[in-house]
Length: 88
Image 1 (cartoon, rainbow, N blue to C red):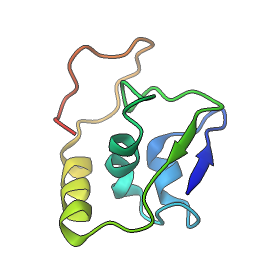
Image 2 (cartoon, one colour):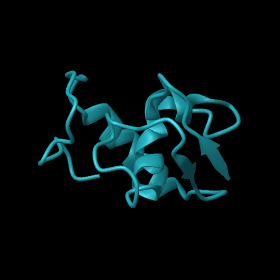
Image 3 (cartoon, helix red, strand yellow):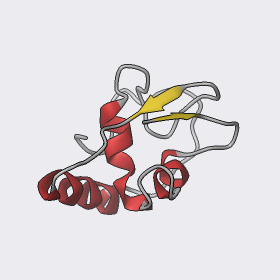
Image 4 (tube, rainbow, N blue to C red):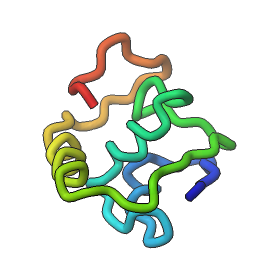
């Protein structure tokens, strides 16, 4: 599975797309699957090719949803944070 990031995309919106994960709160799964190219989940770039597994088990999904719910509200920034608010 693959998705090419477009200008203005967020992991939240991408994961909510029915052709991706169909659930916005699963965005940590996208982040974790693409840590090789995403340092900060708030800062993704157009043309990045995001990939993810076909299926996730109940524990993986539950963990992702929990982390998404615990993530503090977005605060605009231009440089990757040195420390993320949660361990994803």
